[in-house]
Image (cartoon, rainbow, N blue to C red; front, side, top):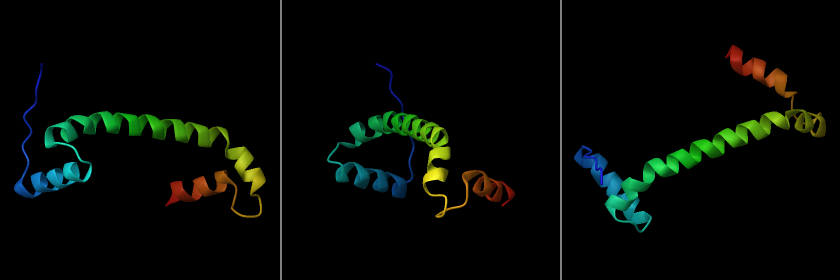
Amino acid sequence: MPSLNISFTEDELEAVRAAAAAEGKSLKQYVHDLPLREQQRIQFVRYAVTWGEQHRGEFDEAFANEVPPASHGRRQVEAA
């Protein structure tokens, strides 16, 4: 089975060990799971952004008096 050697500073390794312990995992299992969790996070964010874009008009209509329309907010962000 392929493996990977990863170098950490002492402080980094201590932080990773603490994170693994907080999840009740071995260091090896924790480091193994990180890229898989990141892949799931990216997939979730992509879906959430797509969903938000699809429902932007409904949100703007439902909360017309609460927030500026999304297109106005987007211009402000792009200009910043």
